[in-house]
Amino acid sequence: MRARARRGVSAPGRVCLRAAECACLLLLVGGLHLVGGEVLTERLSSDGRALVRLHSFGYGAHGSLGLRLAALEAHVPPGTKKAPLSRAALLLVVEAASEALEEEVLIAGQCPLEQASASVTTLATLEDALKGGADARPGFEINQQVSPPGAFALYLANCDAKHTKLSLELRVEAYNVRADGAKDYLSVGESTLPLMYVCFAAAFSLAAALWARELWVHRGGSGRRGRGTDGIVGAAGGVRAIHWLMLALVCVKTVSLLTQAMRYRTLKVTGGEEGWLLPYFVFRGLSYAGLFITVILIASGWSFLKPFLAERDKRVLMVVLPLQVFAEMAIIMLEETAPSDRDYFEWTDLFHLVDLACCCAILFPIVWQIKHLREAAATDGKAARALGKLELFRGFYVTVVAFIYFTRIVVYLVKRTAPYESVWVAEALREGATLLFYATVGLKFRPVADNPYTQVEEEELRVMETW
Image 1 (cartoon, rainbow, N blue to C red):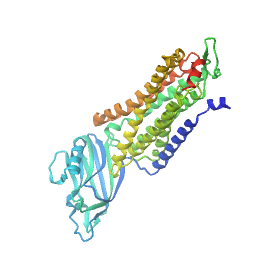
Image 2 (cartoon, rainbow, N blue to C red):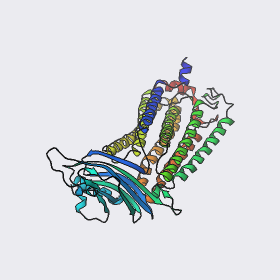
Image 3 (tube, rainbow, N blue to C red):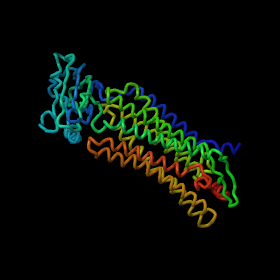
Image 4 (cartoon, rainbow, N blue to C red):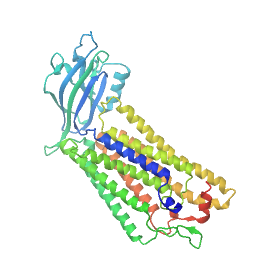
């Protein structure tokens, strides 16, 4: 019975899997209420903010913005005379100047309608949309050719926000016109994303085929522990359950990239998701959760050998990594949420901080264990061999942390600093780093007999049982 328990997932592992399942369920349920696309409808109800960010888009040489306003209502406290809505307007702002505008309005309390700026264009005041009283004129539309090309943000400014709250429905249609006259509903920097995702899907499918071939070649190995003449336990090699899990992960990642490609292709042509949003959420969430579950199982020695980490350190990882998966899924959901939502930026910042905190916490257990083994090696020469094995696994964890930090920090900085027409570069770097990470882990844990990651001396097993 004990032998079977060792080959299965430990209690902390089951907790990790349940946490990942809960995160996937949250992603699935949350995704049902999200509507994406570059043709969208924003709804505000009794909104008292002075400045509301509604939409952002990268326009090319033939970019256009279409707006349709309906259900406009102004709300004032009882007994207060309604102020004219000439001090409330829709603004088109150069993206580079949007942060300064938000500081002027939200911090300094200035009214953008009273200050002339080359970076701010007033599309229409809300008074223009009124027919009389508080009813919006049906079918009030704005069609604007955006010039010069660039990244622009759409805002609703309300200079009387202290006394007047606004309710409205605004349909936004932003697009670029291609050379053949067709509309392209993706920003200039995102227009190449469908092709890019297809290329990476092909690369991952090739990686899956190569890994499947590797498993087929070594399928004759027993995958059981054996003891060689040199005292090595587990040198028999062979395909284990973790290898099949790694193959499944690469396959799920391939499907995830294909759903992303189809989603962006549909967005590009129609401006809507047309049923691809939910598969995108599900497979992207599964690929991300599967990645970190696989990392945890490899680190804990599941289906390999005795774990190289103490129970205390494994518990830390079992908490940190599911929390990181949960935070990443929440970020995915928030990416599809309209920026006009009141708590959009607060929740986004919070989950990014949680994600980074988890990244920092991943390496701590390894450092603690290395310190413990160094102290033990000073008095027990046999522990030095265990230290050598743990150094190998520390290299694996350094690879994991390098991957996480590259995809979180470097990609984020590239995304924030790249020109608007090169936004796709950040996604290419992310997927390229993921492919490199998968290949590196696959090389480290190939099912071959002489793989040092799957070998341990019998004495080391007794030493590790005392940790």
